Image 1: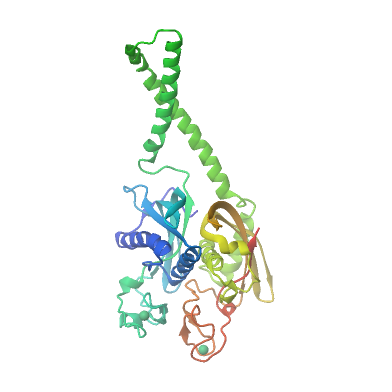
Image 2 (image 1 turned 135 degrees about the vertical axis):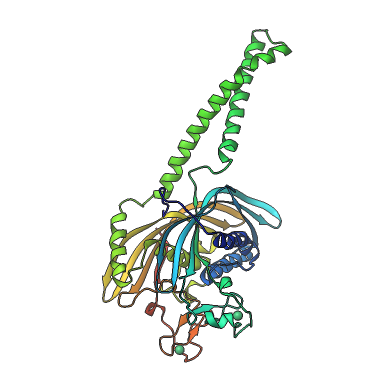
Length: 422
Ligand SMILES: [Zn+2]
Ligand SMILES: [Zn+2]
């Protein structure tokens, strides 16, 4: 996924510091509902919804991200750009420890060796997008980039360009098949130790049975050490192979057979907007699905035009993209393209104080117009009213606060028309 084995570019130092802050504040945003740094408003919004879901269930989810290999820096994969912004996908070996508490006692915990994929968006060098609308990271009101630099007209907070860009505009975790840093050594030691204990136990029993056991016979166990190390190594390799096959098959499930339609879809969308990429579309899809799943009233959401969602969604407390967005097909009719996607997720459910882990496939159907270019920076938190051109945050107002017209999001962006279990 966007990973180039031949050309590895490390993320710039200045970006790295911001990405670290994002990683550091992500856990607190989920656990305590605190503000996340350097994330765009769509991410902040679904994290807030996730935190509210946990609160409603009277659960606390401790969510800790840790660097699996301090000696390696995040690397940059595929990139795309439009008139004012450039975006690229960045990857880093980050593990996630989750611990779920109810009334102070632990009811679930896990520790996943993941790769964190982030989409980082920056302003294109040399261009000053002063009049671009942007959300105030403090109060969420819509103003312009220039406006924020002079002090937000709603809350007065002043920003430097450096506070606003670059920012994280998408993220997901994938289970890593490889080992990072000291994980190889740490992983093989228990196998070697177990092999030694079993071998030594058998040898001692054999000596006792034959009546030859003396305390000095323990020295005879010394040659068992190299044998056990070898055996432990072999067993560890077999374990890693099984793990590779298991993770690989779960992450590529449904991926095959859809590559062709994915290419066709990309080509079709590039006729509307040459910068369109499937990676951009994937991060959009994940954000919209998370927002619907964590929302208590999805039908109030501007971009959701489907029916009532499955009641099971209300029990979802964490949702991790499983690494494959399958494209079941797309069709075009009267200037509207409809695209059928299958997204794979690792899901945590909280049902009657029980935590259940499940792998699920969600079928999400999206629509958009084919007569207007795709705005790669589009966000429902900074809408431009087509009637009066006023800018507002559609999460707070369904109608334009300036002219009162009801805003229809399909005039600007993707609309989710159906979301259900596959
Ligand atoms: Zn503000
Ligand atoms: Zn208006």
